[in-house]
Length: 371
Ligand SMILES: Cc1cc2nc3c(=O)[nH]c(=O)nc-3n(C[C@H](O)[C@H](O)[C@H](O)COP(=O)(O)OP(=O)(O)OC[C@H]3O[C@@H](n4cnc5c(N)ncnc54)[C@H](O)[C@@H]3O)c2cc1C
Figure 1: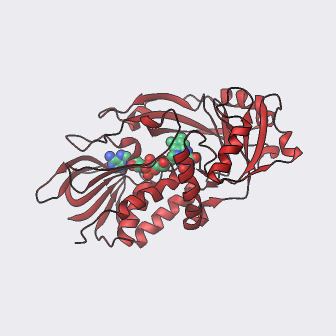
Figure 2 (figure 1 turned 45 degrees about the vertical axis):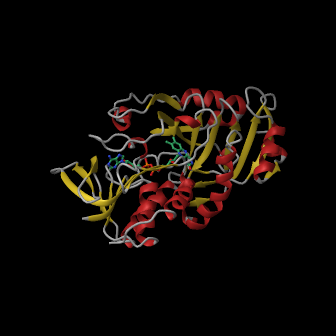
Figure 3 (figure 1 turned 30 degrees about the horizontal axis):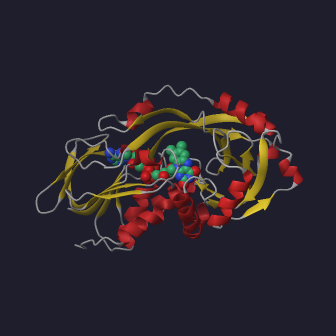
């Protein structure tokens, strides 16, 4: 019998498994991941931005938590952090939900540093469309290095790992045990029991058979495309985000030595309200992944002409899962649910990578029996 089973080997599942082993002394922890490798889904296919608040002028809580969590993340995962680039936030003149003045005030309120940019950087932008450009403190993370950390750390913490295996059922067993059904890609399914189960499956949170505990929060699933680009020399050492509306971001993607390009209008291809039985992974696999990179580049080029010289490499398509309640303010809080009707069972969804500390704070308050 396992003391804890972690379902999902993304950043959250791995960090929770390591926390339970190292900080809480749990033995016989099993982590089950449906893919062939760890951190290969949302934890790899993302924009790689270590948020520092700037991105969230409409959600003070998310902005504030980012300010608290960024230094901790940089301290705990130094090898995965890229800081050697210049990060700019540009405010669009039209259709932006903030003006430059409002953005400055907001950054002052959350204590995030803004600096003026030099003329050379300013001339990259079309002044008819961009009101102001600021130099900010924001970093990127290397999703490949986080994956390597996951492999090393699980092994060092003695966590058992099963790859290419899906958990398909969670049920209440006898004597306060939970029963899980594991379906390996090759081989027969297996029923195991455990004291604690952590559902860290992100897009797959509600895709279990039977009467498994469902999240009470409404989730929105979105197929999103980020284009991987080779930037021209003028943009290569930069990350740029245009605020705050139907604009674009280009961020270094250290795992590939490229940049991602995303666009508020073209990155989301398709969205739906999450439902049990509507498997987001299947939906993505059967979706015709026709790139919209041409439209992204064409529109971004109006604001930042040099981007028209960028070379397209390929696209990362992934399902993004967000809480419906944050659709309008863009906030990215965690979801942490303790299922009262299934003692020992938790559902966790991380809105962004550095929110892991918000999960740890919740776990610190839990009592776990060390058997
Ligand atoms: C397009 C996009 C851009 C983003 N940009 C940023 C950003 O710039 N900065 C930031 O901080 N965050 C960003 N995020 C959010 C960030 O990626 C997520 O918050 C984080 O990766 C969630 O980690 P996770 O471990 O919960 O999810 P995942 O990494 O998706 O892990 C869940 C794992 O569970 C596995 N799984 C699912 N169902 C089962 C099952 N039944 N049995 C076994 N295994 C299962 C999956 O295969 C997967 O590996 C972005 C997300 C997306 C999609």
